[in-house]
Image 1 (cartoon, helix red, strand yellow):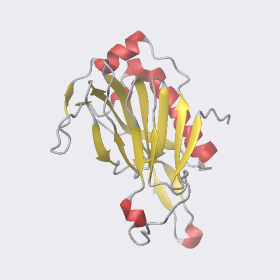
Image 2: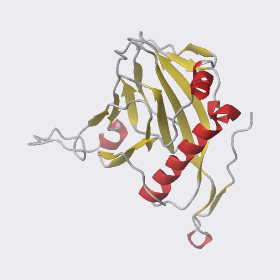
Image 3: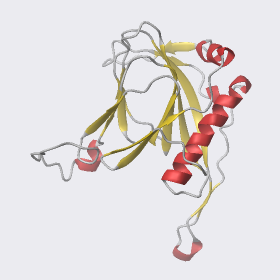
Image 4: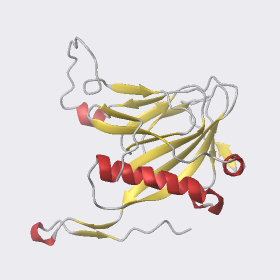
Length: 217
């Protein structure tokens, strides 16, 4: 399988990949994304919150079939070429966010998912910051005097994705999005994924059969 990777990052040793989408979003597909029903994603610590779709399976829309296929190809590249996993992964749910000028997005992770990703349909500003999960460092949390910071010893890593980028990362990594300073809404399509099929072996009692299906709805 040919790897089409724009950028490979290891934040604290965790794989974060940035791909350039092979699919150019059509006007019709863009209209489908922005015409969904949205509601405010309200949080007390996020006064400048954006909008999120009330629909949880946006990529199941038939008019977005080519967008979904492109994302699935990059997810397959991530799991197979980078992570060297034979087991197939499927997209379990997907949603779209609209962040107007001034909007931010709080720090969070994605439960009930193994790998997550975001497709930047329209983005001219706003960074995504990946943070080292505190659960991984609480037992050995030393304030070293680093003479230089790199992708392995940094506590966070900042990316500046733009339109057409797809970022895929482990779902349990904390991440947040900075303020949109552009005049246009930032349109982002998010998705989660989970493994399917057979894992492990009966030889050492690790066998697990996960006949995961696309969510029924």
